[in-house]
Image (tube, rainbow, N blue to C red; front, side, top):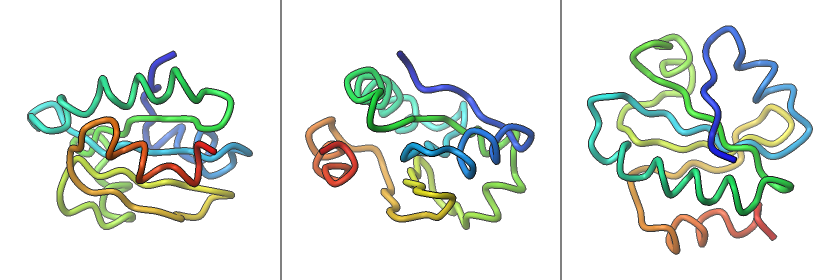
Length: 107
């Protein structure tokens, strides 16, 4: 299982109205660190699919959502529970560091 792409059109359904905890990866094609963190997020998605949904939002294609969530640098990851942001992680990190940041949602 890999992270799914979301857009302005599918964001509410996939993230805001999702009963599961959702990590949204705000990224762009031109962002090297975003490309580096992407396979790590895919691994975490695969290993924790019952606990956490991971989706990707391209900030260039969905600027309104990037603005709404005040994305000023990427990669930025926001964890949503019941439609609310409960955690923000900025920057590319190795898998152990990301798992540590997300430990509360992977337990």
